[in-house]
Image (cartoon, rainbow, N blue to C red; front, side, top):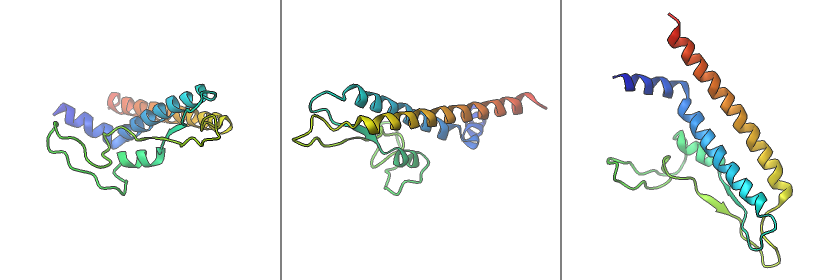
Length: 137
């Protein structure tokens, strides 16, 4: 009973969506950091995720079909929200050292960091509001 109430409060306040946003931002930061670290590695392929598509998947707004899981042992089908995001790698041309463009990666990293910070602060405010609601009478 208690876990259903907590689950309802968290889902009604949007905490799972913030959690998914922060998870995706964290993954994207790791991928961008890897791109920057391998800027001079021959044959390295630029990596990224479709952030908006992955976020839409978690909220059920994706336009792709999703298989229904009726047992925990089932393998997720389609673009299931629990499935790891697909990491896309840019193709390396024969004439290129690798597919990393440092002039695009650094601003992308700064924007991702800013979005992560804003989402973390908004989530912190949600938890403070929940705490105040629980403590007050």
